[in-house]
Amino acid sequence: MPTIIFNRPDNRSERIDASVGASVMQVATTHGVDEIVAECGGNAMCATCHVYVDEGWIARLAPMSEEEDELLHGVAAERLPNSRLSCQIKITPELDGLIVRLPDRQI
Amino acid sequence: MSTSGFTPSAGVPHMDIDPFSIEFFEDPHPAHEVLREAGPVVWFDKWNVYGVARHAEVHAVLNDPLTFCSSRGVGLSDFAKEKAWRPQSIILEADPPEHARTRAVLSRVLSPTVMKQLRGSFVAAAESRVEALLAKGSFDAIADLAEAYPLSVFPDALGLKPEGRENLLPYASLVFNSFGPPNKLRQDAIERSAPHQAYVADQCQRENLAPGGFGACIHARADAGDITAAEAPLLVRSLLSAGLDTTVNGIGAAVYCLARFPDQWARLRSDPTLARNAFEEAVRFESPVQTFFRTTTRDVEISGSRIGEGEKILMFLAAANRDPRRWDRPDEYDVTRKTSGHVGYGSGIHMCVGQLVARLEGEAVLSALAKRVSAIEITGPATRRFNNTLRGLESLPVSIKAA
Image (cartoon, rainbow over all chains, first blue to last red; front, side, top):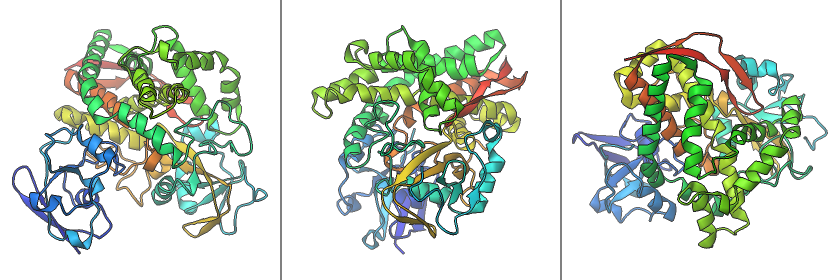
């Protein structure tokens, strides 16, 4: 099982074993990572599952769609070059050790 | 109607419940439980359709739009067999790949970025509405709040003319009644529909939409070549159909919950930042949009039940939202619940495109109430409004006190 590392705004860190095929958003919401809201449930419509992907990992993710790029303009916290919507990041074995930082707000 | 000679495939339990009867609408929850527990797929003898009421099956049907299509209508009427009562929607009643193009236009017009721009005025309108209601003390939480607030912000955001807005709620009620079977609710609504349809057709035209509003933004997409000039009014019509009555019933549901469950009201008052989740939980708990249909495009199996091509399937969003297989304490309203995954707005490619507007309105109203009101008391009988698809109240007499 790939491990995903969530770094919280208060610098606490959480390592969670994730199922291949799930999204990073699903991993977070099913393991009590409250910083991920995911109002739309993973349908790429609400921009409330925003994460900052660790610089070393960003290039290793599948590129974002045009829809995700547009939604990221509307995120509540500052959009940075490494911003992604976690519902659009699907877990693969290659993502073992993925590090994401959580923003301080989603709404 | 069924193409299989009005009988379901073997093993599918027969239900003699009419899910579109007044008796059902009065208290749907016990019947929803019967449907959920009867099996993953059920058959309604009254209307010759399949039904799914568990969360897993409702979610699965919603997320397979090629097998469970919308282009044959999302009501009981099968557009492959009978003419639609109005020109077919090019987004609600469309399938991939055509759907993606029109959906992208409305997604952009109602995006998170646009909501950021609207937030200030929506919040201010909610606060002044609550101040006015505090001055009154006693009022009808449906007419004076659940209807009055959306009517004070949404038509302006769309850019509608001031004249004729009294047609908006009757038109929306008509649209949602039309998804039901040919019962009295549907027939009465369609018989009385001519003036409302005329208003809507006129209001969707470009010259009748104020610059800067959602409607004008949709027409601007036609200039950009994303849609044709003929398609733009039909997309404006979608907002007129689904953008108002839904939030009226959502806000009504939330106020009704908070008035009935004082511990949850106290929890919200102690932390008004819960307002948005309190609204979302009300959408799960009451499910203002109760049902939608899909039509099978091929022979398919759902959780062991074989269903032929061309069959209507009724999805019980409300029952899925209280399925104990998916939710802890499903029949409790809990403002701190993790609501992500409820299907009150649907799921998949047709999930409510206006969900961000709904949440903004709901959050604005509940936040204003939580900050300014100490107590909400129900002072008279809550009466129900009946519709084939929508669940909500006709009247909710309340009194409130300032904090």
